[in-house]
Length: 137
Image (cartoon, rainbow, N blue to C red; front, side, top):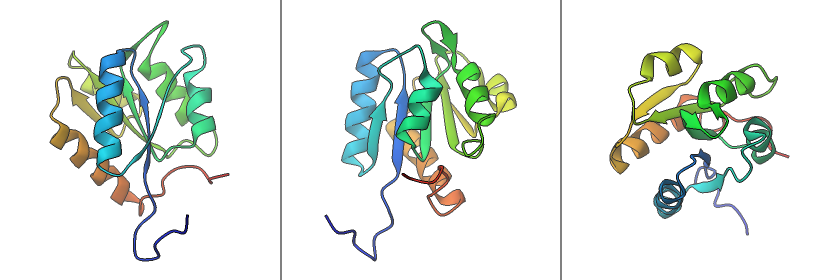
């Protein structure tokens, strides 16, 4: 498949949420909007899965099995080449201050609207011309 020179590269979003229904809904919404989507399948090394996928944006829940999203956030922020990846944290509890202080680029309080999510992703995609992820392999 040849890329259209007039069309910007597709943004890849990595979804990290332990609610399978939420993951399915987000995957469907984001694909319908033209994003590439990858999801976490192994809770033992979320940061490693993100690094392997090399997304442009990570959409991650605060509460995860065996950890919290801030730990994964800190691991990514301390890894060379990943310190500038855009990370959106989400939670059903207001953890905005904690997440932003830990290095998140944005926070969405659940339940958030699809429009709010898409606006946040578009805003973060524009920050550095879409490609704020590590060098693609």
